[in-house]
Length: 393
Image 1 (spheres, rainbow, N blue to C red):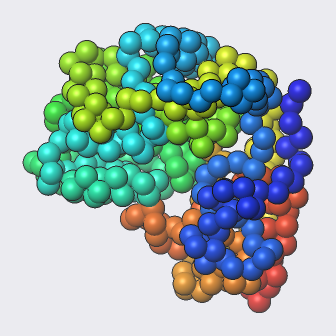
Image 2: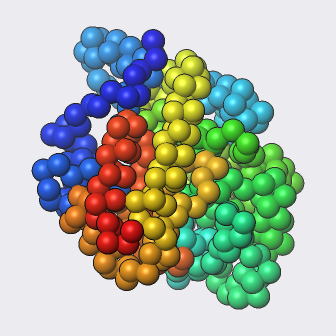
Image 3: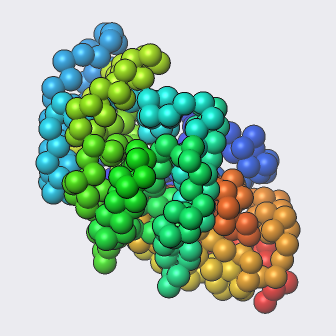
C-alpha cells in the first residue's frame, strides 16, 4: 500500500531535528512555524521498510549488525536496476552517513593544511567537514546559465593551488537542482586525473530526478577515472531514511579502496547500524513502487511553489529544479536587502528555511526551501509569503 502523501503527520515532539530544532536552527519561534529547512521528508517511509523494522522490534534483540551480504546485494541490485551501473559487493564500504564518509575521505586522501575543492554554492556540510578535518576549502564558483549551474574548469585550473588533493562533487546538485550531464562529469573526471586529484562524487540525490532529466553515475561517465574516484550513495534521501545513518561508499579501485578503509577503520566508521541496514535493504529491494508515486507528487509541489513564489513575492524566482526536493529561491529581484528577506520569512511568514549564505559563494540573496511535504503545506507557505511581501505588489 502506498502512503497518502497529502496526509499531514505531526512530527513535533518526536525527536525530529527538522521540527523540534526549528527555533534553535532557524529562529522561527512561533507555535505555528513551518519547517522547510533541513532535507528530510514529512512522509512515511515505504510500507516494506516499516514492516521490516516492525518485525525487528517484535524480535526484541538489538545487537550488533552482521552478515551483511543481503545488504550489499540490495545496494548492488538497486544500482543496476535504477542506474544501469554494475557494482561488485566488495567495492562497497559502509559509512554512518555521507558526511561521515566525506570526513574519512579527507583523512584518507589528504593531510592537514591540504586543499579540498567544492563547487559553490553547495551543500554546507562539505565546507564543515573539510574545516573540521583541518583542511582548506577551495571554492570554485559555479556559473548560472540558462536556468542551471555549470562548472568553470578553465577558471579552476588557472587558480588551483598546488596543495589541492581532493574534489567534492554534489551530483545531482544541492541546492541548485542541476543534473550534471555525462559530458560535464567526464570533463571533471579528466580534470582530476590530469592533476592527481581524488574525485569524491556525492550522489545521495541520484534517485530524485524529474522527467526530462537523467542522472548518470560519475563512474559510468568516466570509467577510466576509477583509480581516482569515490562514489557516495544512500537510501536516505530517496526513501526518507536519514535517521538510519547508513551510506554506501563505492570504490572500484582496490588500492584507493584500501586507503579509504584504513582511514575508516581508524575512526570505527565501518560499523553498521542494525535498523539502518534493515531499512536500507527493504527499501532497495521493495521500495520502487513508493518512489514511482513520490516523484510526480514532488514534481507537482515543485511547480506549484515556483509559480506561486513569483506571484507571492514579485521579483523572486526559483532556480530550475531538475532534481532534489529543495527549491533554491533567489530573492535579489525583490530589491529588498537579504537580511530583510530573511526577517520577513522568519518573523512574518513564520517559515524556517536554510539560509542561502550557509551554502557559500553564490548563496547571497537566496534561501532554500524543502518541498517534501504535503501539498497543503506548500500552499500555506505561499499564502504566508504573499502576506509577508504584500507591499511589493
